[in-house]
Amino acid sequence: MDNDEKSRDKEICVHNFYFYLKCLKFNGFAKWILFSQSVKAHHPQQKSLLDLVTEDTSKSDLLYLGLSKVMSPSFMDLSHQERLSINKKVDDFGKLLKKSAKLRYLMLNIQDPYKFESCMQVI
Image (tube, rainbow, N blue to C red; front, side):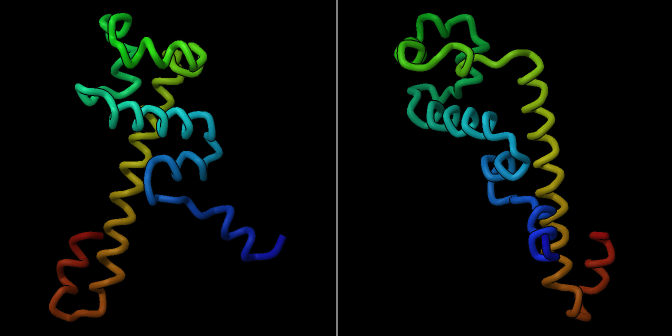
């Protein structure tokens, strides 16, 4: 393994949450998140899969009933531990986005003498 391959292994994708999970090798969660976002985009009340699964009214929701006919219940519903894990990954991703925004700001403005002081406040 050369240095380029080692550095690529350490790269973390911050394009969006799906790619972040894929980079962490959480492929099942990544598929679930993508599916949940698709459900939210097509649901009349803009409810995600997580919203539908956690609500008592999901049994009467037509979209949920239709999905439950073609999708396995184990894929659609998350265990308590899986929900905690996704929430932790969401928090981690948010922190990573903040760090990358600060770094981007520093890289773009550090050489500008008029913005140097504001760059030091970011650090």
